[in-house]
Image 1: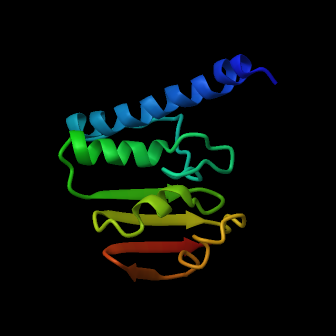
Image 2: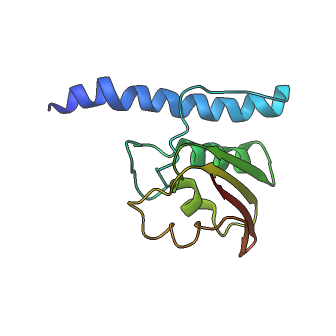
Length: 135
């Protein structure tokens, strides 16, 4: 497949969705709430993509909020049929994140996150509190 086609039809729309996630962080602070129906690429971490996720919009939005919006703590609420694993890698030990999962099954292709996030009650490791509810 030609690179221009991948860039134009796949990656460019993904980048727009990442911009929407970052804008949502800014608008949520200004207006009290915001939503981005695109984005939510929870399999992508700062170091690698995964599970059809090319860009780490959640991690980028949180980093933007910490640096540009002077936010000191965030809460990630991940509601999906399966467990996300990207932002968990990025924020598992940062001390400023609270992660709430609600999912039906684990993302089976990630051996680094699965052993950490396979509980049915609260986890405490490092400074992060994680509630991982498997339904």
